[in-house]
Length: 355
Image (tube, rainbow, N blue to C red; front, side, top):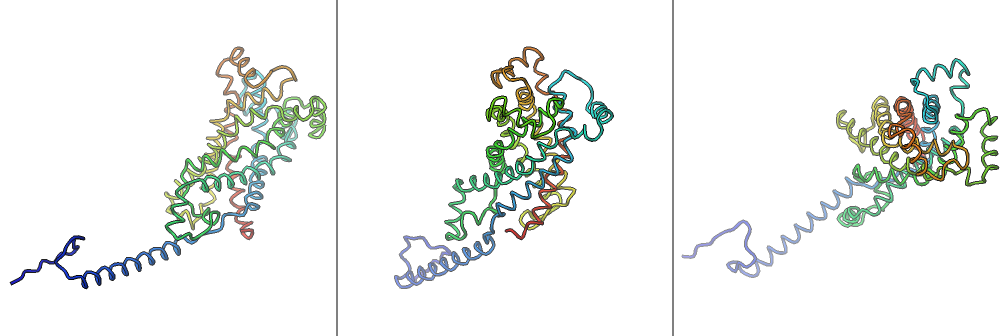
């Protein structure tokens, strides 16, 4: 009498079954495996159906709207920040703001606003466009994208997966740092003219007069004085700005149980995320901003470069001088950046037809 031992998963070297049954089983298993793999691929392709990334033009325009909101809300505090950074005054933020309003009215509070208002729309437009481009660059060099496309049978293009690509916070921070590079081309001359108008209003009749006199003083090099200091401020600042916004936004989505792919934050949550992002940005970049403001507003020949500004500052005023203007910057940061991101998110919805 022969005893047959049945195994749920026969070993590959088992010789107890006949060749025909073995071949049939192998064929059946191969067929089922192929069928299951096909189903898996189809399910993956349908569930992760590629979405088009946001239109570059939409990112550009919505960033510009956000920038205008930032200037309208934050410029009075920016004026006080620059005054504190370039003088030895130790008055409080609100006392200086009150004095300025009493002496010069609303026009004095918004002194120098023309330079950032003219530049801020294209500047923030380039910043948000640069952030989108930074995300695409980060995505394109990530090996995970190649594995994902291979597993899905090559479904979807490189750009088509941007909207659903699972970016990590570190990747988003890197994309934010990349965004500072094109933005500085507009930011540096704008900051130079704005600071001069705020500190020396008696020398210039307006933005155009300031630009002409600065150019006559030293050509294009004079207009772009402080570009290195602007980069020193804006690269870490942009990393903190975009990274914190995305981090807080994700956290609030979890709290509100919102699907990141299909849902949207409430206006209050967007304002909160934007405000916190602004404070994080200035907490990181204020020392470089102090050096930039000193360098850009000093008479030609006062300093040989940004390191010379640093040496003089440490020798004459000490390390605490690097944080001059922190209070008005922080007071300004929350409302100004909350308005920026709110304006950007609202305009993105309004420009949705561009996708």
